Length: 112
Ligand SMILES: [Zn+2]
Image 1: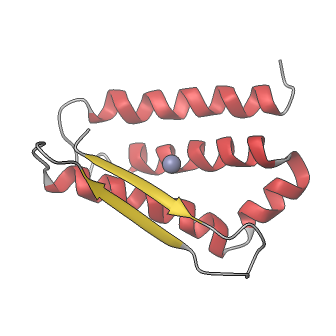
Image 2: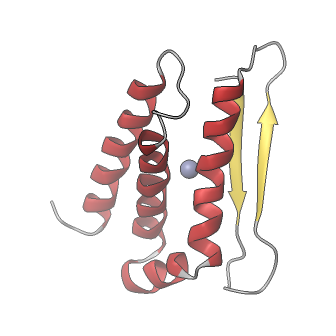
């Protein structure tokens, strides 16, 4: 992947800025569709924090399950937007993320 994204959220709700970082890796070609999906994915995490949902999940389920659930929803955002922008391997990558983080979330909740 030529791009990496990161969403930084304050540990305590409302105590600091929510930011997203997008890293462009040297020596890799980047296409607009990948930028679209990387920014959208990170903004989905930012929305979870800004809405307060993420902090409620942490309170209810703990940090691990909350993080996995946020990832599950962010990857689901990617899958739901593949009809707008896609590239080779995108569907496999994002559907893989949905399945992986759904599993991790359920494990963290003690469902298995
Ligand atoms: Zn993510």
